[in-house]
Length: 362
Image (cartoon, rainbow, N blue to C red; front, side, top):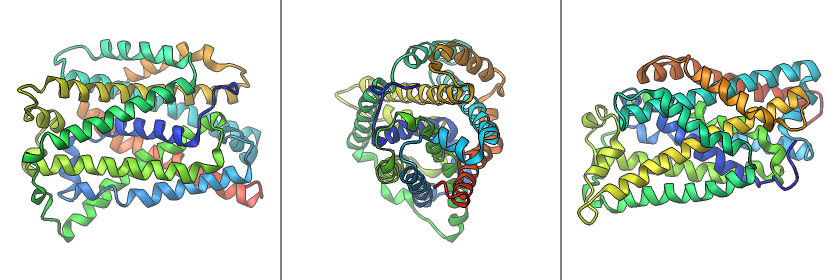
């Protein structure tokens, strides 16, 4: 069980979750997906904002009715001891699978972007070493480090925009017609499925001191990060031609190589790489902490941190079972993971909310 000193605010939890989602967005939505989302892809974030904010305010309502109970306890109270543990087991399996998928995407991206023809297993192993150390530590420490990561991310985005102002052409965002509306909503459905992971991260709410403000503070952070992601999408779309963008594996790196900063671009490229690796570290660690929290509740354990190494070994093994190519991993996400997120992170949460209302628990 978490000690009293290992507590963070709802704002800090939202920042941890959203930086993790930024990392997952880079992994799960490669430039090739632009062909499906159409020319108006940069507008896909607008339908996501009201849906995610609505879910967060529903979660805030739950915590206001039961201020002393975290989400894992509420699941067993509302569904009952047996069905509650069944639901928590499903969430545990899903969080382990999500962690393994993120690890595999991380290694495949490094191999395809930088260390071509290298063995991805090496980077899976190397990536799990700092995660193993972080899982033995406290969530407060990860939250403090995350503030630095968020600052680096904002610095990177501002630097990219400032040092490439001469390349930005907002007319490349157009034309946007009525035929682009349907692809935009198709892209938004995938984004909603990914951002619904914020509900999964709320199984760490036992370490949050002001859970009752989750909707208010979480929505503010979510809107800010979504607008930042939208700004990043607008930046990429305004620098590259549409046809070139759909054929570019890593448009951010291509943009960096066109930036001349005192005759060199190495420092800026290193900053982008550092932000990407750090955000992946936060995502994997946060999913690991969610899994440990669920293990503690399901097994009535006092300290699940002792299981961090077996958990990471399981995630390592599962990550090797996924498809062997980056495009196959992308297809797996589009066909399996997106619907699993809808069923568990949204569908099961709405069922929890409805049953809790009927039983007058919330």
